[in-house]
Length: 461
Image 1 (cartoon, helix red, strand yellow):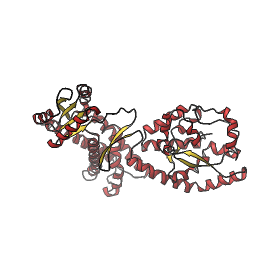
Image 2 (cartoon, helix red, strand yellow):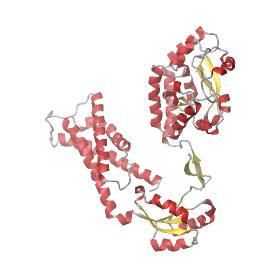
Image 3 (spheres, helix red, strand yellow):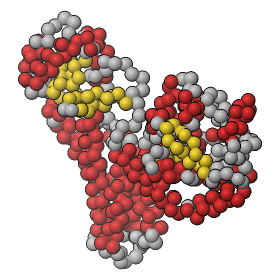
Image 4 (cartoon, helix red, strand yellow):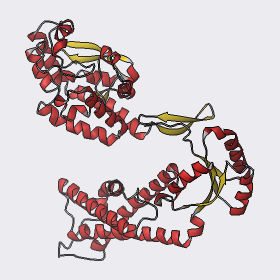
């Protein structure tokens, strides 16, 4: 099954499962209130369902989320029923525990019967759905399986056949092959007619573009799908995305997170979060600005050109934590640099003021960067921005990939014992791990880990 088809299938299943969780909750309440089912005794009366209907706002999304977390939607289509039952059992129990926790926090009372019947009904309804799907697939085994013809060179076909034998592709049956080394593409027409194929998988290198074009034209005339394996160019980390540009198909090789609802949510979170934090922290910001002004001569803010997205320079703001001529004194301290690579860092920097040491200990000096986030130059989470001159001194071009996303106020390095990291390659490695594994949940996780790092003063010094 293609990824997009799989995504549509999973979305439909999530909607159905959400409805079944809600139905199970209603049935559990109905069994207790109308059918008078009591477990371990309990009160005679129970609130009407419309007083508890708000709990469906917890049940509807939480059930599918927990199923997803247990790998329920990522299993092979013909997975064992034992695996399905276990994943479903765990999810039903955790959903019920979550409902109990919400009721406890909202001080809502619900009888034991509903609490016990809800996971039982949830498990029964969703397992019944799974059983019906299993029976449907078994009864319509011949109809549900799609017949495909593999077109390519002998070597390419031999390498690809084991992929089709994997459990994830049990709905796909390879009925014939066309060897481009020995047979003309015109033979594909006869194979399509003989095997009543539903589609053709074209697995050939770019040197066979003329034959590939003919094969696709044959499929167009026959009205069957043509799947072209677009692995002509060997990439190490890039993901291939198919899109269109000016009404022409376009293959995109991307090694950064693609545009998605999560990426959009990250932008909303950045703007909303920065605006909210600037508003509630404005008294602290004014207090810190006053302390800096009183304690040492010089401006309140430190401005420096930093490298942003794809190296685009921007003016980053910080509360000044050093003496006003710190940049001029930096050259005299180069011999004390504790960081490998192009980055400059020393533990007991003599340029730091008394107030600045306190600001740095609790990362308060970084607060003005919320304005950079609001302007769209930075994100709440992302690799820390480096000065432009340090980026120019990168001796490994792969290090520039950390510039492929917006720099952040906090990052994985920042919450991973960063003061013990003195090797620039380790720093970059953590940044690239963040980029390669990015998700909205990872951003939330780093933000939550940043809070204790700030409170206990384990931030940058």
